Amino acid sequence: MFKVPKKYQAAIKAVYQDEDGIWCILNPGWVHGVDETQTIHCETYKELRSELPDIKRVSTLN
Image 1 (cartoon, rainbow, N blue to C red):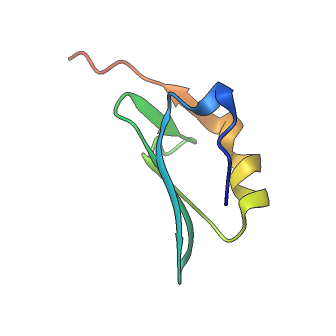
Image 2: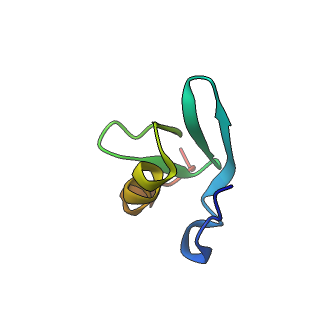
Image 3: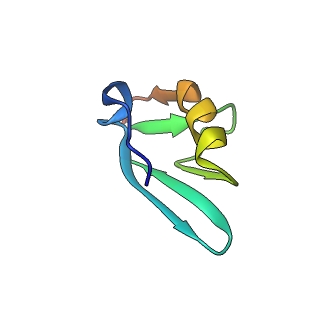
């Protein structure tokens, strides 16, 4: 099981694993990477941990 570091708990809605790998779903107002997606897909928990610093907060106001 993956323990979400405190620094990222507000950003992460859920982390789960299925036959396709590990999925991390972000809360509204948070995005990941240059594509600004709300879902992170990885093969390992180690890979997921390395992706967490790329999470950033975005404005939800239009």
